[in-house]
Length: 54
Image 1 (cartoon, rainbow, N blue to C red):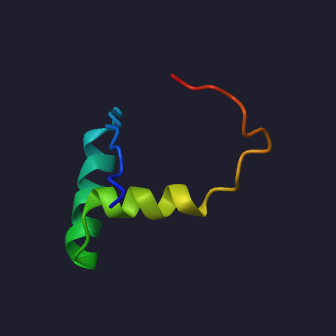
Image 2: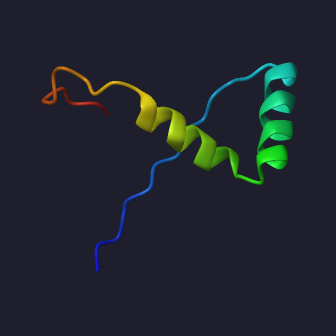
């Protein structure tokens, strides 16, 4: 079975944006992580795939 490696993403938000995200996640009955995952998946694919990121 394949085990997905997980990474942590930390970002700074204003109190207003954090509250907005939290309230929306409760309203949609979803985790903030799942909403961020969906947003990332909606982004276009990078044109260069061989860029190494730390």
